[in-house]
Amino acid sequence: MKKSKMLKSRLVVVVGLVIFVVACQKAEPYKAVKVEVKKEKLADYFPATINFAGEQAPLEVEDVKERFDRELIVNKNYHSYTILALKRANRSFPVIEPILKKNGVPDDFKYLAVIESGLVNVVSKAGARGVWQFMPQTGRDMGLEVNDNIDERYHLAKATQAACDFLLNAKAKFGSWTLAAASYNRGLVGVQNLLDFQKETSYYDLYMNEETGRYLFRIMALKEIMNNPEKFGFEVAAKDKYTMIPTKKVVVNRSIANLVTFAKAQGINYKTLKIYNPWLRSIRLENDSRKKYIIEIPLSGF
Image (cartoon, rainbow, N blue to C red; front, side, top):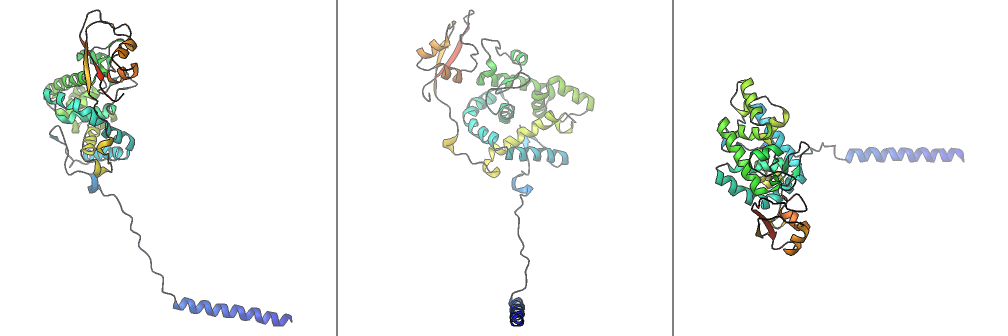
């Protein structure tokens, strides 16, 4: 009985081996499957040329090319910041562009405002404020009123004019828009010291601290991306962009004891008043000198 079971087991094993061998002979030989991984090529997004304010960037210089490439990649992948910049530009650029044009400042400088603040009124750790990020004294030097009552660094049109005044002065000093842009970050004295010490005349030939060394390349990267958003994977529909709300202008040449009461009298609330007039920094407007201020009151969207 035991011998019979052993014979049957051996027979099953033998039959199984035969079936396996036959199957292997009939099976097609293994073929390696080539899997193609799509790689992003430099040529897919990197422009053949790039200029800032009409001054050509020397992309044939290896470190210049790499520094520009870095900023393209960083901002290409910084989705939230770049998408918001594209949305806000629809509201901010119509204010900024005509002021730049009126002053003879190249249109490319609107992208300087983008990298400074993302086109919103932010406050830096150093104390710079507004879309154009003026420090208090620099703002005053450029003709802006800066105090606890009024801070025109938060006034987009006036701050843009102040930025134009600074940049025109820098261009007259250095003879170059690229160096004028660098001085917006490093200061007039700071850039002049670099030029004198290194005996150079071009931004691209200077050895600088990282922030100033990246500054112009960040501006050019945002220019390239915001002019060609689809190429970099950004698609923002027109309906999704932030729009300019029409306003009426109320001229005030007196003190206002309570801005909440003033807002209610204009048919809006205090929140809306502050959104459209962020330069009003107090709960009241003190105006003993009877200076003329223009307060904007939105006609819709509140």
